[in-house]
Image 1 (cartoon, rainbow, N blue to C red):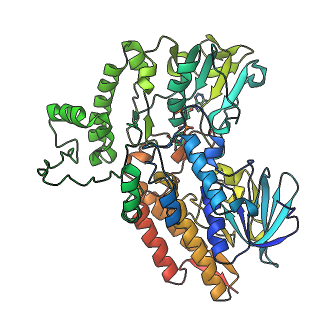
Image 2 (cartoon, rainbow, N blue to C red):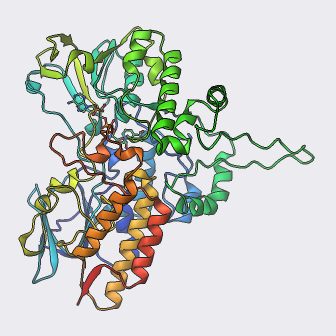
Image 3 (spheres, protein in one colour):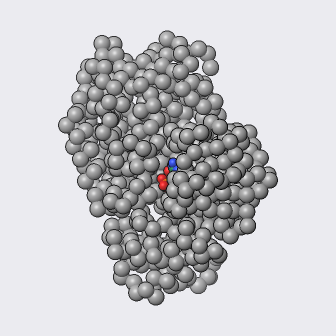
Amino acid sequence: MASQEQQKYDVVIVGAGMAGMYMLHKLRGQGMRAIVIEAGSDVGGTWYWNRYPGCRCDVPSVEYSFSFSKELEQEWNWTEIMAAQPEILEYVNHVADRFDLRRDMVFNSRVSAASFDEDAKHWTVTTEQGESYTADFCVMATGCLSMPNKPEFPGADRFKGEVYHTGMWPKEAVDFAGKRVAVIGSGSSGVQAIPVIAEQAGEVIAIQRSPVYTFPANNRKLEDGYMDLAKADYATIREQQRNSQTGIIYYSPRRPKPEGAAPGKPKKRPSKTILELTPEQRKQEIRDFGFNVLSQYVDVHTDPEANEIACELYRETLRELVKDPAVADQLAPKNYPIGCKRPVIDTDYYLAFNRPNVRLVDLRETGPIEEITETGLRTQNGAHIEFDMLVYATGFDAMTGALKRMDITGRGGRKLVEKWEDGPRTYLGLQISGFPNMFTITGPGSPSVLSNVIVSIEQHVDWIADCLSYLRGHDLHVIEAEEQAESDWVAHVNEVAKGTMFTAPTCNSWYLGSNIPGKPRIFMPYVAGVHTYRQKCDEIAADGYRGFALAG
Ligand code: N01
């Protein structure tokens, strides 16, 4: 697009992922001048950067899609229950084309700083490329999992082979044929990548620090007629999503019965809690519903005794899947509960370890990675592991990383990095006291990563757009979260997370920041659910934006 230097906008949006895309579209609809600044060369955010083999969504496709346009819903056809990255990126590109979004987007421009001018009451956003943009409002649509975490191992630069990070995967195809590929990490990315790389590579060496609880994705191609039924049901699907805990309802179309067909048997459902079942009934439920059921009992998420029963049954099932008992034991998670980390789902992860070309290195036995060498890596016990290619599947500095990486300056020269030194503080995950006119989409303190993020993105975008329209209608120019409202919200977010497995003392997760050395241990997302959260946001808006200071 033409140079936008020195131009003044109503809103500057940072990030052209799904959040930034919808924000732009929405603001345009309200007659506002907005611009999107994006580090990548195109739209897509997560789906632009994470192109690693096996990358796929863990939310059903028809639910992981925008609801804001009925026409878009009706014209797009998904092909699988859970879409793979290329299909989602195709969808995102379709949305960008259809709504002509790129016209107001600047690509290959990474925002390095943003600062609020108190006198002029506007934000100036500057990029690493030296451009600057001024706007009354700034919306950070920077994503929750967009700042890759690449541990700094001594000697990392010495390695002579190719090096990749799942969260910064190149656009060009990577050729694994005949290569020995080491994959560090067994979170969602590693678990998805390992079985697919194993099909192509000479050898895969899975380097595991913590074993993972992972459940089968049960993905499949959508059968004929599925999309027609889903399209007819979209209004109901969206309503149910918005009124749910996570924004995911696991939609299944109800097919019309042929005339004269006998009424079917009522569908058998698993028990609500694991503690109410006898040991034999528990095993029967695993046989009936698959071992995913273990993560679905409500008491597993709140009661340590129930959780330990589920963990033991999980380990038993794993021993049935992995042929080598020693490897099964290494892969078995222990000492932390199911439900502490973000649920991981996979396609044939454990079966990959039955392949002759997949080897597991358990860092709990060898000690941590001590150094990277020219030809591999050395662990603390002195063992040297040789390989040709290295894949970091080591995750992200989640929720705060992308925001803290920019030099954000608010009122009175206050820096965001200083304000958040002891952990993120926000009001509703939407605004930060001391940083007027800046909004965060799916910021810490909102359901964000605990939900179908598209549902949460749409809710935030709609709320921000309504708020800006309210300000305009009331001749107001500044909105800022009040310090007290923010403190009360932070306390509330912590309170509702107490007693869940997310904050169990033995839990270390990126939700808590524990994957990043030195990051404060604070539970960042809001667990009360998208429905409850939406109600709170709407009440606050209806009450004249209670907890926000508004000024002319
Ligand atoms: O990252 P992770 P991810 N030495 O942080 C290990 C979303 N997502 O990219 O557990 C050795 O979960 C680390 O070990 P440990 C989803 O929300 C979704 O896999 O910290 N190992 C762990 O095994 C997900 O939760 C999908 O002990 C080191 C791994 O690296 C989130 O993104 C797919 C290490 C990192 O796991 C992040 O997932 C992909 C070190 N120094 C991602 N440092 C879907 O399915 C880290 N590790 C939709």
